[in-house]
Image 1 (tube, one colour):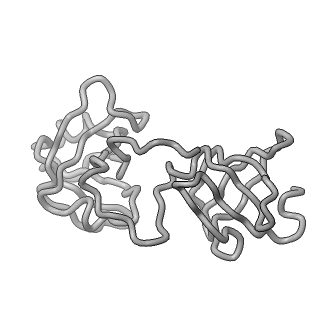
Image 2: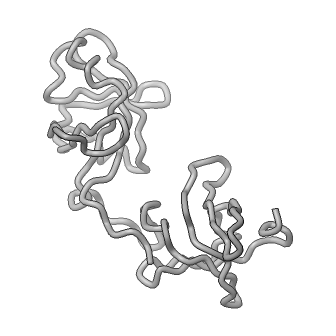
Length: 180
């Protein structure tokens, strides 16, 4: 069965301070940065491993704006460049309960971890061990029933059904994909 829902999800990575007034360059790790980093949004500054750490710090987004491939974010507790510099390398998390509900057919990637992978005929292939964000399609690392590891594109023409509640993902791979 899949992983239970965590209380917090990683939504961004603080890379470095920007300017002198405490702005942070953040790489968003969410498909919905406009709402997650909206003015007034409540976030938690976690540790450098993406966890809450020993002393998580709750902050409020004062403002955010696009910058290159990321965002410049001003947080309530970062008033200077020095304060912002102390946050570099840490992750921003959001409470799962306050995140926008997923659209039909969408899943959080953590929900895929540990679920069974089957062919359309019901043959068990293995279990999802990891999800890698890649282009042109994200990849599922699947440990097969014979102990081999295969990467399967998380693409609509291959992944035919995802049923998180049932702990099941159905694939229709092209010939040879599982032999790699």
